[in-house]
Image (cartoon, rainbow, N blue to C red; front, top):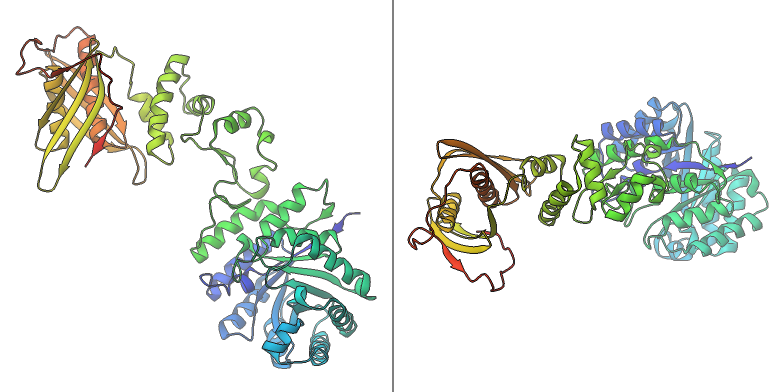
Length: 533
């Protein structure tokens, strides 16, 4: 039968004491309820002697948690232990967790104690705690930097004194996985009564190895891992609960252990913690980061659409995420774009897809995220749905306080390139007048409306307008992150519809006063450059 690995969550103790993660009593109680739903074996609720707030949080959590063991941390001092027990005594299941440092560097510089004196304090504290409750955990602070023979002596003595769990912390995140695994193996081998207690590990992430060290310890005899949601904690944090749990679950082929944690509650726990502390996790954080189940690269998206196992080693549902997300951005391919349009109700043919894909990649270069509303704006703008009599080649606009709005356009007509400039009451007015001069058209603008397509500072502006030409109305629609560009493209689309309908709107092109300057068609055309000042 696979060995059961216990999970002790110390988010409310070690995690909460890190700068920026302080919580109120009510917030701690709220998060403890979620940890109980998550199914962690032990909730280390706080350090009762540290403050009245910590005491009250541990006391209230002990009163409401029904499944998990509730632990309170305390030094080996009698007053600390009494305070912890006062907070814990009414819990359905309680644990006193007492500790003292054992490394020479801590004994000499912090505690001013000899090894012999520290051993005596450890045994005395554990013995007293064991007189209050049957569940006692002892931690040898800075165990990794403790002489192994002395550490084994301490571990043996505290087990004899009543400790049911002995914690071997990598307090400063110093260990290397292979080294830490061998360290745990030595304790298993050298401590004669080690089978009377559970070996626990508490690894910090100063070298980014906390999870790897924890897994290595489990492989070498540890039966409990101490960790925090989102990996929060002192300095660089602790081993991340979600990473430890999913590593053990996903790699059951290599790590044959059982867990009681309900992994489907992981995402909810992570989100709740970020809301309570106002401290988000980075996008690329394993398991719970925003990008953990998001795919933007075209080749990845294509693989995901064929079979999700091509690029996902666990299902998003297994950690409580609704589904994987194909993020449409500049790295996405035609397959993903076509799939998203099918989801939106559009079955594009090859030509339509190619046209829209070109507009999509241009947009994706300007925006970090392309939303469904952006895609609808692209397809509904009808770019390319009418004959392109006029094509916008280049647009430049200058506008600002104390500056006369000026626009310059370059437009292709019947294979020739025309360029002209104009001033106006604003940048859009100037741009429309420049189009009139370059094309030689004369139409009436009947209606003009602009709206935001999606949220965010980089949202597209969608322009809907209508012109009157030859006694008839023609609509234009376009979207862009540059509202002036969107306006001009919508205007030109309306002109193209008028021209395609047989309405003659362009003036004679032998009148230099009304027609834009003809640019040498054989000269290289500059790259399209849209500027909006």
